[in-house]
Image 1 (cartoon, one colour):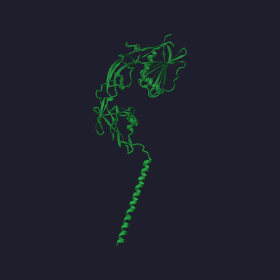
Image 2 (cartoon, helix red, strand yellow; image 1 turned 180 degrees about the vertical axis):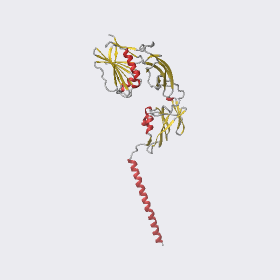
Image 3 (cartoon, helix red, strand yellow; image 1 turned 90 degrees about the vertical axis):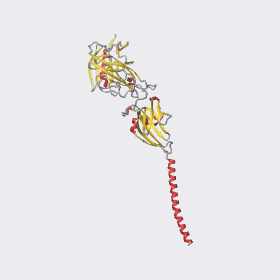
Image 4 (cartoon, helix red, strand yellow; image 1 turned 30 degrees about the horizontal axis):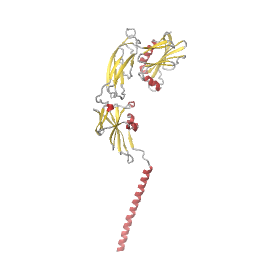
Amino acid sequence: MKNSQYIRRAQYEKGFVVPLLIIIVAVLMIGGGVYYYSKNIKPTGPTSYKNEAIVNAYNVLADESLWRNKYVSTNIPVEWNVPSKNIVIKKIQENSFSCGEKQANFVNYTSYNAGSNYVGGWNSVSVIDCGTYYFVYENGDAGPKLYGPFDLNISTGKTTTKNPPVTNNQAPILKVNGPQELNLNQLGTWTVNAYSPNDKGEGSTLTYSEKWGDSNTIYTQYPPFTHAYSQFGTYTLVFTAKDSTGAQTITSTSVRVMNTTSPGLNATSNWKTYTSSQYGFEVKYPKDYYLTENKTGISIESSQTCKTIRAAASGPWPKDCLIYDLLIQKDKILVEGTGVIKTTTQVAGYSAERIEDNNQGMWDGMIQTTIQFNKDNQWYINRVSFNLETKTVAESMLEQIVSTFKFTN
């Protein structure tokens, strides 16, 4: 009896020990494999879930280092004072923020798990869109953090929420001066004195728009403004200056356009005069334009943006850029092909060739008109380069400048 009980007990213990040993071996093998894998595979960083469309709209999100260098400190965990925008950003509730007195647009950007190899655990990065600028909002184990402000990447064509009013914001100061009378097709110039009272040394930039009264088109030149009218009448001009917060000032004036034979302002009476002692001629140009002498003649530019586009040697030609070049050389300019219109005219008593080249050059939207004539085996080439949308104004300026050209000896 005792022997049979001993045998059964030994069989039971043997049946229990064997499976237990198998389980222990399996655990050791799995644990060793995990250890080997974790030891030999280096972490590549947090697993991110990014929305590329949002990255394109909010350009600093493409590179984390671009937004992390603009940390906004705070004494209150959910409220940030931003002196550069004169505004307070507040967290109202989860995923809900205000920019000043208006609610911001909260945009989910990315969430990532930093994992055991990274401090912080789960983090989320989002965008607080205030209209014309935005902030990057990070919420993680270290608490909520705000970075910014950053200007919106307008070139993407992103439609944003309407810019909220800024506390104590003041509209720009805008004063425009220009002619009260013009002759038909005469180029008028309007000068501007404008600034933003909210500019606290940050260099805020004003943007402008103009409505000339002869159409419903709204233009976006930069001062000084230039325009010519092809029909008689009295026109109301409307000018708008807007700052980076969206605050704007609108002012208007009027101009009377008369027949060129009617008494009125002399189109070039207040222009400057350039005299060349080397070639013995003089020519007038608008007083607000910029003249530069060079080895082949002179260059007269309507705006400082002309220097920028010339230096770039490519890109879109600005609408506010008109460049008049007077080249003096032995050979005439040859322009052929479709889109070229040639006619004859006179300059200072000499027969001249007028060439309209409607083919765009190396700059997008740029076309040219040239008037050239020969005197004593020298070609005097008068050429204006301009944006095709300002053709009437540019060719009017060319005609007026050429009409003042005369030889002094």
